[in-house]
Image (cartoon, rainbow, N blue to C red; front, side):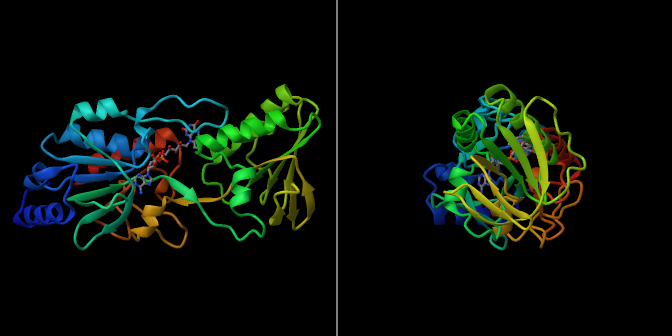
Length: 326
Ligand SMILES: Cc1cc2nc3c(=O)[nH]c(=O)nc-3n(C[C@H](O)[C@H](O)[C@H](O)COP(=O)(O)OP(=O)(O)OC[C@H]3O[C@@H](n4cnc5c(N)ncnc54)[C@H](O)[C@@H]3O)c2cc1C
């Protein structure tokens, strides 16, 4: 249970004074520090709404860096990530305070959050739901050009649009390569990607062929029989030449006209910066979300080690927050 203790009150005043708080002003400084929820995806937004509805006396602040992220407008296109969870209006109507900014650091000792725009926000409790980010891979030749011209389309709407346009523009009898990493963060999405690409090829480029290039074999994958020629190749990527469309693997060279180069994932950057990830790159946490590294932190959704990484699982994580003493 959160109480307005002298320590909290002083901490809030100090933080407010230090930052100037253009957005919060003196009203912020006069109130208790909020429960800060970082990330407005399905896990974070559901958690914020649930907390506020369960305890209207609590201040709940949701911090989301993507200005359109809480609008929940349906994303179009075949590779879109679902925009799910409570939307801005519902959160706002319930009294959740929304801050559009990026959290760049957490000072656990001072109980303050650093925001990209330079403000510091005092908190009473932190809930992190930052999703995932690309995990760096030592693949020679794959850099900014690789990320641009061989789009992963794994959560980025722009990359999804680019990949769609590239498939439409590829030669009629061209070769599309879907590269899947050894560690699949979202196995269901990977299966969906195989099916979607095969379906699109069958309709848009019936003479084209597709290779799924993965370090693992195809066990667990359903390879659709849709007319497009789809083959599975188990090999490791060693180096790439993005401009020439060449992928060198430990079993030989592959040339491609279009590459959907999916990279491995890990917990969102702020989880690592805040010291909540272990050597796996994910945040170890109990089923209720309590961090096993820093028990005062709560981690929900895709960033949690062992999470299923689907929308229903992210929402279920937020619902389990009810068993945590806030
Ligand atoms: C391409 C793709 C397709 C998918 N399709 C499906 C599907 O059809 N069905 C399904 O069930 N699941 C699907 N998923 C999985 C599903 O989207 C995720 O499991 C779910 O969104 C996870 O929710 P989350 O809240 O944990 O993280 P996210 O949805 O990733 O939300 C995290 C939020 O945190 C914000 N954030 C991160 N860091 C900071 C920071 N430092 N400061 C402020 N804000 C920050 C981000 O902007 C983001 O809005 C798909 C995933 C992908 C990548």
